[in-house]
Each structure stands twice: as structure tokens, then as C-alpha cells.
Length: 517
Image (cartoon, rainbow, N blue to C red; front, side, top):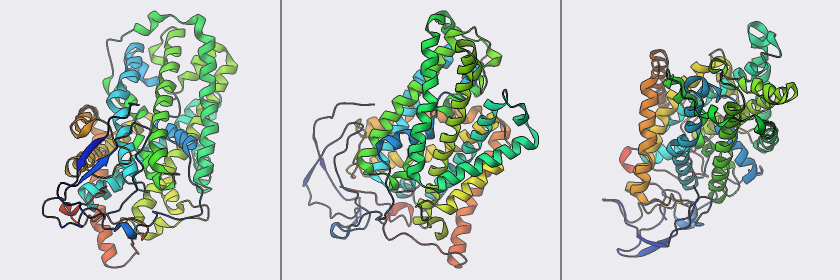
């Protein structure tokens, strides 16, 4: 992902066809032939270009937001991304049960190049291009218009809430062997409710608290696997890694890989809360990518190499049993506690992303203004309550159903992101990009091909039940946006666009004006 900074290149900036000189994103178009020099930075670096909004003159620029709330720095952001995407190896066990050790190991080595790295690179470029809450909603709105921006927000928020409903399920699955009463019935329902309330309150108290809590939980979650690896060295048998199963469950295998290695773009919805996002966001994505891949591969390497293969046993929660067999009961209990900590971290990180996305959409006038109101801790109270309610409504679903449903909706959202990224690259190649993928326009477009093919495969392998339910959810979004516009016209609810944000000029598909240097 790191690459040496390429040589300085010269770029000619021209207006779109039919545009007046001042139509292009707040900066007068240079005279014909005037050259601008643009540095293309490596991942983790930026060229220092300021965020210039559409329709805003250079002298009129104001900061996106001036407030008294502390911004998130690099280290907390790394662990927030870690928990948005991963949280540790909890939940990857099904990959071994579905396909055996060899395919599971290869999957977590190869899949990041097909999916994680392209998604992280796009997030770094687009997130620094539009450093505001709302993230991918703003990207799609800028490229395709507000209608499709709303659809992006609806599908990604819903997939995020579905994803968040998984963490209480995983948490209780890891405690089942120790506390059998939590395996079902009223005790399980009460546990899900209590867990959701406590973690929701943590989100309410502020993003800074969430970020530093993520660091502490991350260290606690990773450390037992380091110890397990050291204890397991004498027990490792490399031949166990080469086992390939004949009857591979491709649907479960791909969904497990996809779920455990996606959601890199979720951190973009917090860009408005990040300290100096032009520098901080690319660096944090790079460090988090290394942490996530190592956090999956080495525990899987240890678990499959140190004990005989029992394919049926490799389901969610099995790492606790693996730890007991390798290091004893004490290590198994530690892994169980680490799993609990991991689920706490994933829950609060995902809820932060989901709720700030709703805040960003409200600041863009896509949702009623009440969603843009902040508590005295700086957090979006209404967005948090909506996201928590969604989690409670969906927590009855099984582990596999949750993964399949959120993957289906997430795929639709990613298709819109890829289209928006490609459109902005082709139509406005000279746009101001504080971080720019150093592959050129053609290379960047080709980079989107493998993940797009993967999306098609995941969608094709989905069950009929999951496809029907997910398509109904998509149709609801298609109808919901016109309904909200009707409510706005009738003034039943207040809608407004924040004066601190640059104008995207997305009244229709043809008037999209992105950021231009």
C-alpha cells in the first residue's frame, strides 16, 4: 500500500464542456494552457491542498466546522478503523469450517489485495477530498446527485445497523459455554438489551472516549493471541495447513471473508471529527490495514497448525476452545474475555460511524434537521438512538443470516461508491485530492474491476431469502427519498443545509461540481 512518491507531474485544468469560467468548484478556471503542478503523494502523505467547496470563492472559504469538541488523532483513529473492519480474529472460524485450513489461510492473504486495499485507497482519496461527516454519501451526491446520495446513505446505514446487531450475538456466543443460561430465552434477550444500552451510552458520551476505549480494548483483544502463538510453537505441524476440503461451502466461505475484510469506508463518515483529516486519514488507514491482516492471519495459522482439524467445530466462538487446548483453561478464559472486549469495540465504533453518517446527511439537507443536533458531548443523539433501535430490532437474527443480509446491502452501496469514484476521476482528473491513489486514472479504474467481480459473485451466491429481504430494503429507500422531499415541501419537518459546508451543486445529474484545485 505504501509506495514511493512519484515524480512531480504537470496537469492542465480545464472547465467541463459548456461551463462558465467560474463554474468549477469555487476556483476560477486558469486561462487556456496555464499549468498547475500537482504532487501525487504516497499512502499516508498529502500534498497540503486546501478543501475548496463547490460554488465558494477563494476569499469566501470558511472552515467546515468550528466547534469546541476535541478531534480524533491518528492512534485512536487507527483502532476505530480496526474495529470498524475487524476487531480481531473472532468470527473468522467459519472460513475453516466452510473450506478447510489451506483455503482459509489463502483467503486472508489474497482477499485483502482484491478487496481491502482498493477500498482503503478509495477511502483515503475520497475521504480527504470531502473531509466532512457523511463520507460516502457526499461522494455519491457529488458524482451522481442527491437522490443516489440518499440511496447510498440508506443502504450503508442499514447494512451498518445489521452488522452492529451481530456483535451482541457474537458476544453471547462466546459466553454460552461458560454461562449456558445465555444461550436463549429471556436471559439472552435481557443480556442483548442491557449490552446495547450500556454501549449506546458510551457513544453518547463522546467520540474521544470511544477512540481511547478502542485502543485499550484493542490491546486487550490482541495480546492473548500473541501469547497463544508463543505457547503453540512446539505444537505446530505445517502439514495441517495444507488440508483442502472437497465439499467447500463457497457461500459461507466468501461471506465470511467479505464480512471480515470490508467496511474500510465507514471511517469516512467521521472525517469531520478527525484532526487534520488530509494527513491523519491516509496514515490511519495504512496502519490499520497492516493490523487487520496480521490480526487475522497469524491466529488462524496458529489455530489450524497446532491442533488436529475438526472441521465441524470451527464455528464462531471456537477460538476459546483452541486456546484451552493449546495453553490451558486460563488462556481460553482470556480469549473469551478478549472476544467480549472485541465485540464491545466493534459495536461502539460501528455505532459512531452510523450515527455520524445520519448527522452528515442531515447537515446536507437529506434528513430532517433534528438529526443534525448534537448533545453537549458533541455526539448526534438522535442518530445514536435510531441506530440503537435498529440493532435491537435485528438482534434476533442468526449469525449467518446477519452476515449474508448486511453483505448483500453493502455490495449495492459499494457499487455506487465505485461508480462515483470513477466518474469523478474521469470527469474531473485535476480535482483537488490531498491524497491521490498513485496509479493514474486508468490504473485506478482497473483497480476497481476485481472487487466489482467479487461483488457480483457474492450477490449471485446469496440465498433467495436474503436476496428478497435485501431487495425489499432497497425498494424502501427508493421510495423513502421522494417521501422525505414531499414532507420538506409541505414543511411538516424542518430540513436545512449547514452553512459551514461547501455547496455540492447537485440539483441534478449534470450539475455535479466536485472539488478542483
